Length: 279
Image (tube, helix red, strand yellow):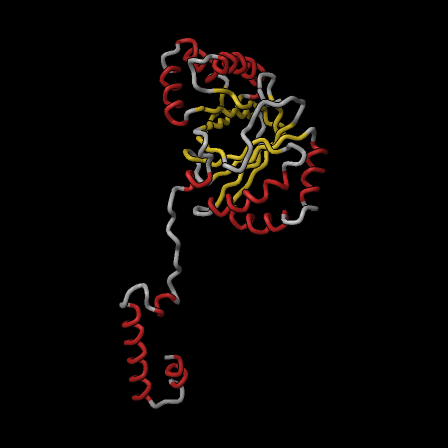
């Protein structure tokens, strides 16, 4: 077929027309004879079918934890009162065995979006536990009054339901004082498995100083979102820890292969509230 095209400039008009017709006929024949044809394989990218949802491939199978991350933008003049009210209600829910939920951590944003409070809740038992908890809260008069009072202090709020990556350690209470960094990555659709594969190998480079707290990916809310939560003694410790990762063979490759998967990314430096289990 290729020599036919090369000859067109040298052939007479009649011959050229014939050869073009032959070429187009061949193209049509190859394109109509199934995916196995060599011609179509030149232009159609083969995509391996997923054998399972990425939530099943990447999350911890031995647990059924579901996480809810909440972002509350508070009126600046109400932040102190908000923290006090939220701590009171969180403590009650956290220690009440009738509610299958627990506070993982609560923080005020230090650097990032100002006057923002971030809460991370865990539901042991997954979606059934979440449903049970919400049903009970909707019948709890004290909680409903709390929501009305809290609403007066808020500008806006949003949340996401998350699963935890299987290769990250589960976030557990820790002693302070620490600062926390929440790094949020909005990935290109279809790249979550590739991200997980790279980070499953890379997480070992970031655990020597016990800085890795938890890694999550969204299920409901903004999709293809990844949250990595880190703890440091202070900002200088953060800088030193992150710089030391570049001295480890393989970390540069992780950055090289994961950066193209990202659409946008964001970093928050956060201070734990007085009631947060993560201090």
